[in-house]
Image 1 (spheres, rainbow, N blue to C red):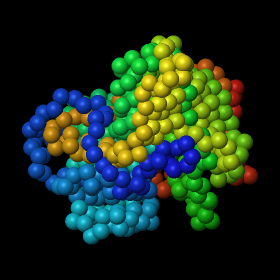
Image 2: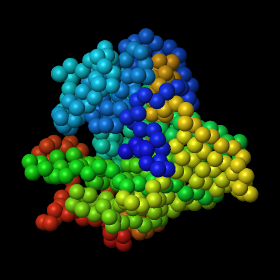
Image 3: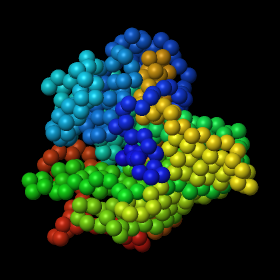
Image 4: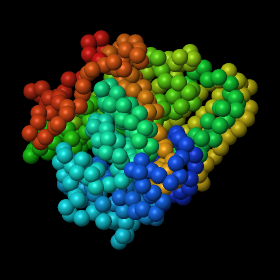
Length: 445
């Protein structure tokens, strides 16, 4: 779920299509080849065909921004597990853009089911991957193997085997000179980029500790319908099942955890933490926790305290706060503030008129494709995904989990080759409830 407009939460959202857009530095840019793209032909003036895979609100917003990012693009294919979601998405895209010639999705190119993604991607130059994240590794692998440029939402996997698959495909994407942008949009947001510049200029010295937050009331719930199979119910109510979502520490709090990794310039070596479910513990809340608290330890010795919560009527906070040897920096949405240890403000930014980072990431993607450059976000996306999974392992188990050991895990949450006749990966008991992770007992890798 992207940032909401709750108190202390970033104000941008994937559905905020009208905020001013502009190009700013973001992602990892490799040296450009100004005349040739990964498909071996000049694309300066080529009409780029786009496929949308995953037609929820997130995918709908992303494709509208992609279509607004470049004058010579066309949406030609859409894919979703459910026909009603695809039809609603297409209607919303047309509503946003009007009768645009950029939307040309013929009925035969509206694909539904578990094999829909492959069919849609085969028709495109650029693919937008916005399904529930459990499917991301297999979709990303297919896209890169078949020479597609990619925008994919975060997180990029829900289990460690999926992370390894994305890392392998990320390496191949670089070799093929394919652009990959990951929806960790703070990397494309002025306030965070300016804050990072201050850190590089040694404004607060070496970061030694920090706190990162995503505390909110929670997200939507989709109740079970009488006609649904267990698999369809879980697919519809995907946020509450780990094979599809990975828990909210991964699906949502990854943004703040990623900022910690980015600003420190490292990934953790270990994590330990605690969590549980006290408020959101009904049958439709599946198997995930409603709160997590994790301490991440980094190679430099820095320790980051991470907390996320889905509980109504509690403190809401989506932000980051870091302590360095010379001072502190606080980041939240469009703002940051740097102080020395006496409390004097050294530098600050209030960016209410900054460009929308959700639009900027698409602008940068298409600009790079046109200019023969390569944006390579996938490796960091995979490693920040792995960091959040490491945190989940720590809260579910109650144990210290080491990065190197966790990265070898062969615990697969997402089955391959699902069909509507497949058994759901997790099943409820006779009371309709699911097994909940139990610290000290649960197997996490």
